Length: 353
Image (cartoon, rainbow, N blue to C red; front, side):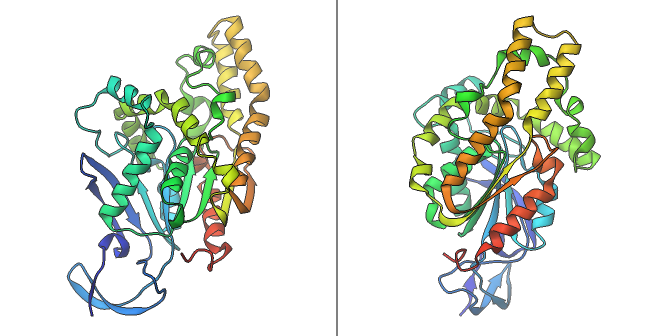
């Protein structure tokens, strides 16, 4: 008996703008074919794109990427191409970012209001991802891979579909307690950094594992997504607070499912920005001192926040990436790929839902 299989589960690679009802989100999927059903590894005759052929049904996880604040799928090409050699992977752009559309009848002011409403931006983003996956007929299990602010969205998604999540990789992730130590925006930092170009001063551009064209695409998309970026920044404290209220650490929501936590040396980026800002005579003496004081505590506070996330599971791995700034997905995509492999290979039995 033939089964109608979603091409998003089987096509070698596929990308498109997909409707979630109110607007469309950009999504790209690649890697080995998969299709989840109650019985794994059962053979059947499948119908895909009009062609009938024998396939092997599997329940292998699909990897889902959650980019950081203001970032999109254009920052993840090396991870996607590497992972797609051994696992199915989905990258997508949140509303208003990258190639995705903005919500209809909204502007920057409205987005700021939404970020401060009862339902924060990260919760909305997680709900929209659920809608997107349902529209694509992509079922669990899912392995969630999140960087920076994307971890807030990923953990809100975990709250919604914990029974379908098989494991997680959290890379230099934002957490619920982030605002206790780090303000966003920080007027002292911004004054000292002034108009300095982050990618040039920190070496991000020079060391990026992106081609010139890929870097250009990323830069253009970020420029065109200014309103959405501002909205995510505006809702920073709200989304952190709402995540903290879910008590995921206390409840150990991942149980014994594999979790890898990657800590980078993000303070190195801002040490360079601080030094360049002081040299340029940016900011007041007081602002420079406030920035300096923050830097002196930055790494220890960052490690404290990162290590807290190990409480999400009893099956964990801690990875430190020395010499790497915050954008590990661009600078050291190999580290993220390695941790995805660890999660996938940790326990095949645990990854079968």
